[in-house]
Length: 328
Image (tube, rainbow, N blue to C red; front, side, top):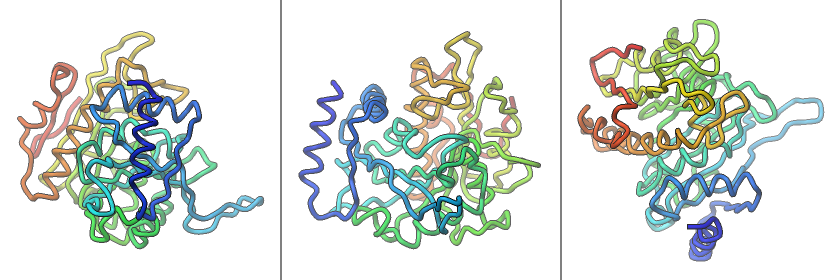
């Protein structure tokens, strides 16, 4: 379908949605069209709604910010979620270095398609390229959790199960914010979803994760990210038996290699998100569904189920699961 077709579908969904308080912003910018194109290329549905960037708090001309101060974008599947059928799951996901809350439209769409889930992409430090702060992430997450109706609308259940996570520096900040690491997160997340999280100092290996974990990483270093300091570490530091790692075999392919920023629809200036790696976001969506269900329904998915979810990309993904350690 064309982008115009998708826009018509979104418009119909918006006209039908009259009683929800969730603010919806449909952009016709080149960036937003690229996001719709990414969604269409990877999804079997065009019922994906995203809110556009929204802001909480403000920053003065002197650079001082109110607390909390963050930007966010929500994404959900309108064929499943509505004010009459509220989302039962919320995924709070912090962006990576130099990224904005609108950069992960394709990933978000794949994670919510056909699910009673809202994906909330959070920029914990608008205006700064640095997203490492566990304190700022805790402030944003706590604010959303305490004000679900105001921030996310009537289409999300007040008792929704909340997962946390993020990409790169944002993924690290979500771990640092956890109570087991002395962080200020006011609640215990149901699970963690980390797209190659990367930290500072002792980094991810110096932290703990007690909740179920879905970690993502690679076999070849890109974008200056040391493998055993990132996704590999997030999986290995998880003490919960419900853990899985999707390790992408990113073989060297000059000019078209799958890189650390494949999770963002357009990648980053240092490592663009090539079309050859678009399948990664699709497979993540399938893993996400299995993982979320394993937590919400209380029945862990099997390694065979995760391996089956890789489909015809099985030769490009290593799956680590449960008690087995992840290795390069």
